[in-house]
Length: 355
Image 1 (tube, rainbow, N blue to C red):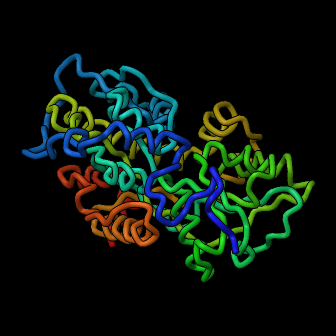
Image 2 (tube, rainbow, N blue to C red):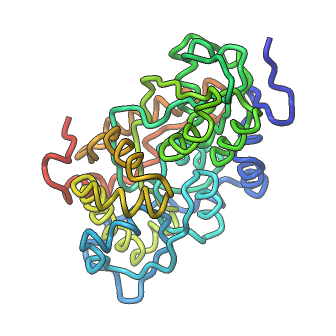
């Protein structure tokens, strides 16, 4: 029977112990009182005008940084960007929120659940949805894994504070495999590639363009991508409560949301330029692979109502709580609905999800 007792394995009741390496554990250790970390809940009417001159935000949204100039949106940015941290892993963003070094970030829907669990006060302020899988399970070279049904007894890369962790849990549930029947190897997703290369894990969920890079190198040695229909529904913008309680910064966040949504639409409508700007020059994949990756993506959709997003977050939080990874929580507390619909209002009707 697979066990979860090694230093790199996660037990079902090892709440926040190893996610993201030592990071989340360190965050929890330095947070003796959740209320002190969370700060006041954002309230009051959302500022409607432009932020005051001199307002600055630190924005960890690399795709928007790369989209603003070619999309002609740079001149519409209503505040100064103090820095664009090149960070996207949930644990890194949570650490940035705690260190007051990041004001706004983009992630999947899982990091806000994790942050709430350890008392880091932050809210979702914009939502994008996707209806097809974003991750595939890459296998180590020489593995005989062909489907999720073969995961039983295997070592699986697992980061409970990131989207990839919930993709693992959902895939296991769908395959009828209990977490006690696999070995969940606790790693931040940024180490999945190395773990596959070294044989530390048998499989791990990878997104693009990392998956393409890995298979290009190890496919000849028997590595493969195992696809499932597990959907990671949400991409979210989120910000710390202290930012949303600062009226100048809240106005800046409000002004950024339409540009984020418009940038995604521009990338969808200008695929050749976006492939060259992002996949080739920034991510280092070939143009042919960039075209293949883009062809596999869904059109960006921004919901006018967040009801579906909240229901998804609640289902995900419940799945994590059932596994003992986080305490039970109310997903409505993760959203600042003062911002609801702003992204959808900024894009043409074909990019709005209204159902």
